[in-house]
Image (cartoon, rainbow, N blue to C red):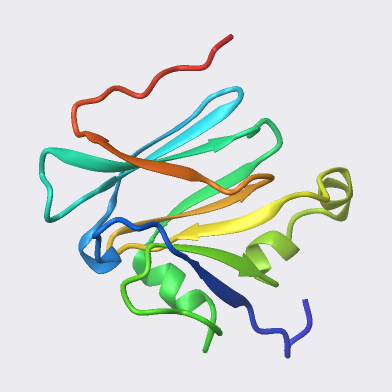
Length: 144
């Protein structure tokens, strides 16, 4: 990545009433084929927002606090106040992965979940799906 490359954030609309600054990552599970990320819904204590990513066998994830994430990139393009999910282009997290890994996985896309607490980066081939589910709903395991 050159010094002049600035990551571009494209907001992904999720049609769920949640202000990302008030949310946080509750739990994350990475199985053989699926990954689950559950987020707190501040205005709905009985439910959570669950994201599911499929075909994750070659995916890379990182979880970090909002502060180091917010100071990682100066003046990123496309951030929207209180947006939870972005597709990100030209970000160092993807670009610093090995050239061999990127060649073997050309379909990989970068998604970033931004909250006022823990944040999640996902380098994965498919966009996440999501649903509002009961807060006590267990994560189904995919060990098959």
